[in-house]
Amino acid sequence: MISYFSPAKVNLFLRVLGKREDRYHELASLFQAVSLGDTLWFSLNDTKDVLTATDPHLPLDERNLILKAASLFRKKSGLSFFITCHLKKNIPHSAGLGGGSSNAATTLFALNELLGLPLTLSELADLGAQVGSDVPFFFSTGTAFCQGRGEIVENMPSLDLHKKIWIVKPKEGLSTPLIFSRFKLEQGQSPRLFLNDFLSGKISFHNDLEKVAFSLLPQLVALKENLLQQGFEAVSMTGSGTALMCVGSCKPELSDDFFIAPIEFVNREKENWYTDPSFC
Ligand code: C5P
Image (cartoon, rainbow, N blue to C red; front, side, top):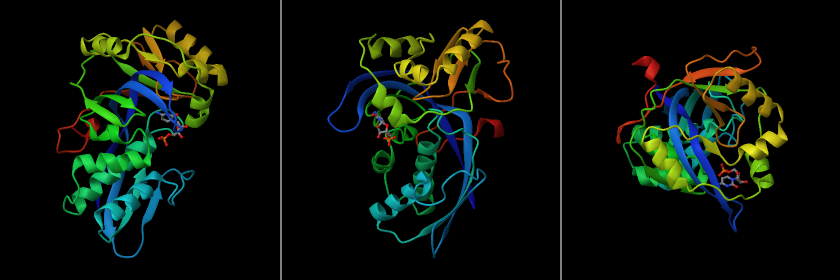
């Protein structure tokens, strides 16, 4: 069995620019891969896809994006194979951290390696877009400006913010389709200005989806306020929530009811997959 690291992502800024004719919204967002991640083990077998996971709540059939990705890979490559996969889950779900999307991208990358590179990275990213809007990002080098419904991915130089970042998530999660369905369009700062801030080393967190998420789950308002009062200099939701990113030199002081993890940014070389920085 071969193991692969499957990193979470954060949205350092996220602007929603409009509603499209399909069921999606037009986005402009700076995505960053992070050191919080799952581990996936893969091997090939001749009889059927078999998925096991440490989290008993996860579906282990084609509702799981790992098996959906494997099935799309099989169709696109024309190869006949099955996978045995074990997932060690660390990324919380319904968090806006892209855990399922990352697992799908990792599966596509791993299968391509195990089967002798039948597909190009760009074909893998296109397959990923059929699984979910966030999947193509993981085929970037880890820092990317993403547009369209998220699938138009432009690599950016890696960022060094020289600050400690924590992920804090309450037990409650939020559904991405629900958040987008309640979203009301607002004017705001140009995405390029947010991008320039980050590229020049300035933290300019922003998330247009925060307002909807905070109105659906008011405890997020109190949580953000609490974290700012603890001394964090910036606190912002990632994706459609409910995880918050906190920047500052303190450590979140919260009860055991919260998921809390320090993160680092991770990037990858073009031909290699992401590696878990805790093993370096
Ligand atoms: O692409 P994915 O399946 O991850 O999207 C889940 C849901 O999130 C979509 O069905 C849609 O309701 C919403 N969404 C959206 N605009 C995007 C991405 C997702 O409205 N750019």
